[in-house]
Length: 68
Image 1 (cartoon, one colour):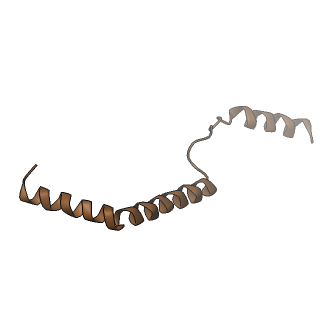
Image 2: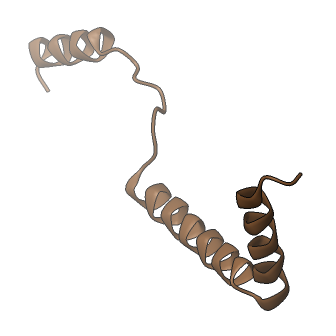
Image 3: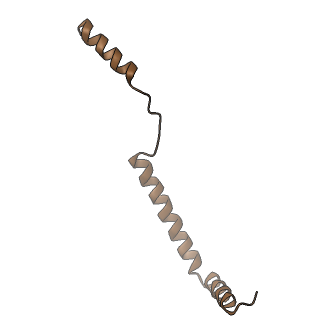
């Protein structure tokens, strides 16, 4: 490299502001989305199970009647 190119390169690198590590990359978004979907599936199964569903129905009926 010529001296002029080397100086320009050094100046460009020095002027560049460090951006840090902000936000998530595509792979991190994919893992985060997968984890959210897995959690939603588990919660759906739990809420729709027999005992939990019956308890929730009783709770909602009690709330609609206004008896606490």
